Amino acid sequence: MTIDEMSIKLAWISDLHLDHLEKKDPDALVRLGAALESEGAAHILLGGDIADSRCFETGLEHFLDVTRCLIYFVLGNHDYYFGSIVDVRRRAAALSLPGLQWLPKTGVVELNSDTALIGHGGCGDAHRGDMENFILLTDYAAIKELAATINHEDFWINGFRERSALINKLRQMGEEASQNLKNNLEKAADRYKRILILTHVTPFVETCTYRDSPGTDRGFPGFLWDSMGIKLKSFAAEHPDTEFMVLSGHTHEDSYARVASNIRAWSSPAEYGELRYRIVESSGWTVGPSILV
Ligand SMILES: [Fe+2]
Ligand SMILES: [Fe+2]
Image (tube, rainbow, N blue to C red; front, side, top):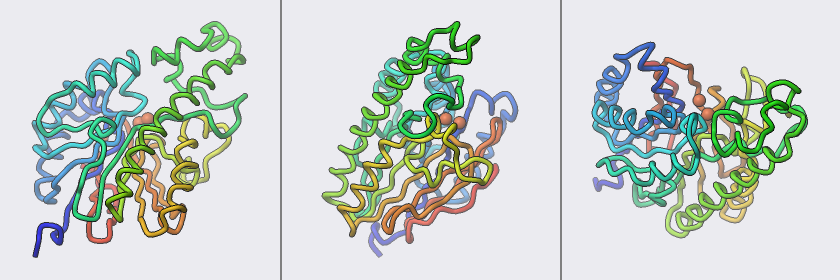
């Protein structure tokens, strides 16, 4: 048996929210280390909302110490809280901890001879849904670039009627993130038959659910990375012999959909202060149930 024929197990963890976890259950990471060792997980996929901008590096260091696996990660909206997107991404790109890889910088990772891993956190890109009455997220006040687009009196007192600058910014961010991921998608599709894509925000309306029901027009602007979903569906249609698997979080909801004949997508459940993982196995690239540590 060659190494390519051996099963690879990845542990996928989304919405870790370490800042909440360390207050509520400080021993959870140690239990996770033991659980992943007994599972035989080779690598960890960390799908964003790791902590916030004040503590994501120390959180990642601690996580690395405990799990002793190679970690591939993307950033979520909470990772930018109390800071700026530009600064947090600069710091993520500058991290030089052995065993830690930020996927937008790393590019295409070979998992075995026919499977590649790529990723980007993406964002809720205000590309689909009700642009006048979408659900307001703390993001819009707690992240520097987004807070700069809002009139705070209007936001906090008047019911946020002047949304156009925020919408433009979210769309621009969504498009930039889509271009980064699309570039890596093209590189990966040249060489690999299967592409595993790690995101924070789901690109697909099918897995952008709320309480086991389909998502709503009020929810899509903040919870769906629609510009990426459109690109991915069109790319997959042009590459019918390639299989795409998309792993996302952000909604904290458990959801699965076969989005196209060659695209499968999962969203993972999460709760603040809880630690959950799912095993992704290379034999057929299946995704196991969410396991509470
Ligand atoms: Fe989250
Ligand atoms: Fe999130």
